[in-house]
Image 1 (cartoon, helix red, strand yellow):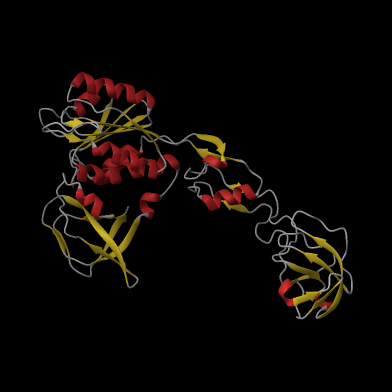
Image 2 (cartoon, rainbow, N blue to C red; image 1 turned 120 degrees about the vertical axis):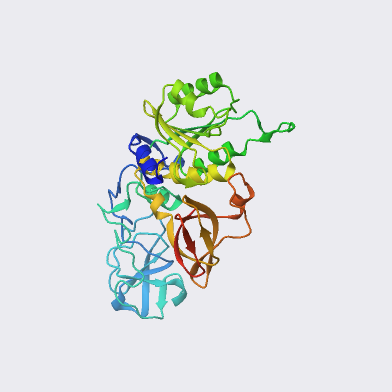
Length: 394
């Protein structure tokens, strides 16, 4: 039995850095950027008006000015604003030569030929400079950024239709057990629906991976070996649930060996989910987890997140760790590290940790639905109300 950090290290050392691909920005939300986006131009690319009104010289107002032109966004005026003149201008239009401020339409009245400006302005009031937002050579989006809609807008504003991103990690998902039943079938006596695979599938989508769902596997050595052999050819990572303990039907680890995997570790000093194992075949990493829902979900977060971080060059695992305050006491009298499910709530600017009325038994499902964080409790440790603790927010 090894410590959690050693198990994480053994897996992390085997992770290969993701390769890259160029994709359309229409498909890029949620993808991890593989290069800095550097502006190849000023933005805006010209001095422009931020509002509808008149382009004038500040030294001419207030006063009566002759209107010499009208320009809309997309137009360029061929007239120069000189003493006593103004150009009618719309939001987003280039500011004509000679003008040094924009007067709001609401601060004027006009007969169509002349405009009366009723306010005074300093030079460059209501004036958006060329490159005021983004200068040529500026970094617009940083490498390893998980792209969102705002990033896409910034990239598109530079005229770019494609971006270089890291290829998604292909993660195979398979669950073993004679008791498992596919969805949309009538539940047989002694059977359960396979919720584990769908949790992992959904969580991998949230983490930016490409999940690949395999059919449920019976507790049959040949069937498990065949599935693991096939997955090793198709996936960067494989996550299995079930068959990892010491029972007669716990065949996953032995099957992995028969399928050509090298076992990196088995059993980790934590609770829940201690009887997990890690293995590798070629460049495909296998993570074998407990079939108990709470144990599976907790150890998935502890083991899979750091591997995906290394694959993409991210640091999300550490960024999710926050300091919070215990709102209820908790005692761990055992020699194993506990990772318990808790709920964090913001109260008066303080992040509070509640245990809630939920079970921490490894087979519980409802606990996952009522909690949003994981609290680590070291062996023989007690937390009292008001103690400052570190939790992993999910």
